[in-house]
Image (tube, rainbow, N blue to C red):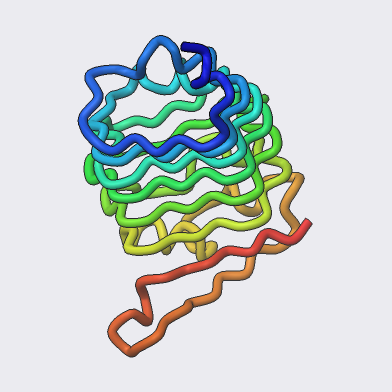
Length: 180
């Protein structure tokens, strides 16, 4: 049963007690979507070693911990999407992790109060999308409370654009375009 090693896209919906051990054999996996998984802090080490992963989505309670810590790995990851993780309070990114990340999407994570610690290490980051996040996070991005925005040697300009379809959504969607 070696067919799973050829997988390029994988969508897992439902509760996982832990990330399956065979994850580290998915060398061709490019897209991974986890939904309703209920994973905790120890989930990332099994995913971070996937050598060709380009897009990771943690959706709808896929992660139930308070701290999402990217310690190492994710060598080719371009897009990271985190949506509907109600307990998530902080994201940490160690130097050298996700070196190719271009887009970060954070949606409906209302406890998250600031951009990821260590985000200045993401030297290829071009866009950050925020939707239904805390006012503290939006304020920190708008330059009122986050010194890291000014101190990063890689970022010369951040433009915050409110996007909406109707008047009720005026403050819900924010896109930061990072221009190097």
